[in-house]
Amino acid sequence: MQKEQIHRQLFEHLLIPDDSNIDQAQRLFHGRGHAYQNLHHICIDWLPPVALITLFAPEPTSEIKKIADDLQLKIPHCKSVQLQHRYLKHGPIEVISGKAIQQLDVLENQLKFQIDLNKNRNTGLFLDMKNGRSWIQNHSKGKRVLNLFAYTCGFSVAAISGEARSVFNIDMSSPSLNIGRENHRLNNQSLRNVRFEKLNIFKSLGRIKKHGRYDLLICDPPTFQKGSVDILRDYPKIMRKIDQFMSPESSLMLCLNAPHTGKQTGQDYLIEKMKENAPEYIFKEEIKSPKVYVDAENKGLKTLIFKRKKTTV
Image (cartoon, rainbow, N blue to C red; front, top):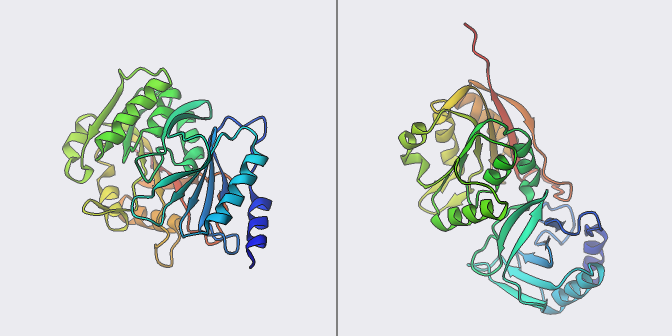
């Protein structure tokens, strides 16, 4: 396919924000789902007022400049177009046009989150989890929430917004948890009932149980972190422990973004492993990613809700 055709196809499927959502952080184009020929290596996010192009394989500078110019034409509110090279080790970001904006606060469902376009491969907010955060916001009232692999605590912000009784955030990264604190402050949320602890969950079961039991668990692990997490190896370990610190009628949100699950999809993998390792819980529903995340191979993010079976006396 010629470059002109690739460029045209990209903009045919580009989600242009309108006046109703121009202020909301969102994905505009998702090539990683392999739904668009020769575009599987390109994603574009809108982090107002920044358009962030992410490449998972190299593209000529001239082609990226054309995309940047068209983005600024189609999104008048765009003040900066930036490019992330995710195929390089640290995922460096460069400014293609406009202002050099490195840190900003974005909106999602009227909640604010801190974004960093300078230091890290990840910006601080995974946009494909928007509907998951919304579900948590709508199902947290009065609940004691356990947030494993909390990262920058987006789920915690959503839970407190939804009037959760308490949230316990656990992650191995102190900098990420510090951003989590800032995310709560950005939303004028009290930290009185929010805990943040740097813990290895595989070595800290007693610590987790100490503050339980919990009514709602969120587990959104990284796929792989050298020396700490290999989620296809470790997810069953987590599942076997879950019921030790959950309440009798608890709910679980289990997430998986691991395309290499053999013949199983991520959904099949989670359901099967839960049957094997935590049969007390039954699958209730799947939370779909936003529609822009077209996934031709069904290998993208899976977010499943499980509910503990009611005990009979």
